[in-house]
Image (cartoon, rainbow over the protein chains, first blue to last red):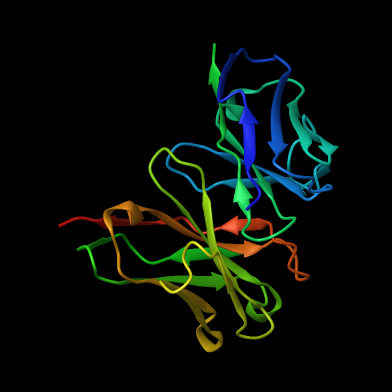
Length: 107
Length: 121
């Protein structure tokens, strides 16, 4: 199975800050990497596919980059509604696996 | 709009089985695969398997092979996930999630609201 590791596991930031979250795969997954946002008590919501393609309706302050084993989710200017947990997920090969999550908290 | 509505919370004893439903609306049910993902408290989501949108082919995570069965009723636009031989470690929120595109790219969008399954004696 492909292991997905996110860092940091949590971070504190202020509204307006630029935030970056890293996801690393245990082997090369090309660009088969997706990102989700999850708020407490809610299902995850889909943000980015193919490492860098923004899902329709997702604000442009979200962006993704990377390929191979190292990927980054960036929020260019953190908004109040962005405080949540973010997960990466690989769809290179089954079993589909998720990273451990990064909780973005208010400073 | 696309919507997935799951059945309600379940409490089961160890060794029992649970079957969760996921009713889809707002799109062509047979055009998209349906995945099942679970999330234990405070843990990362865990993919369990999926059923092909175009036929009844299924693929399961090796971790759940032999214990999980995913089926569907096309006439009701409803997918089902049954998990047997439940143990306390199966306590989690179970989600259905449609594949993002008809070509089955194995990403999840949208998700159902989740069904809490509690396994306790």
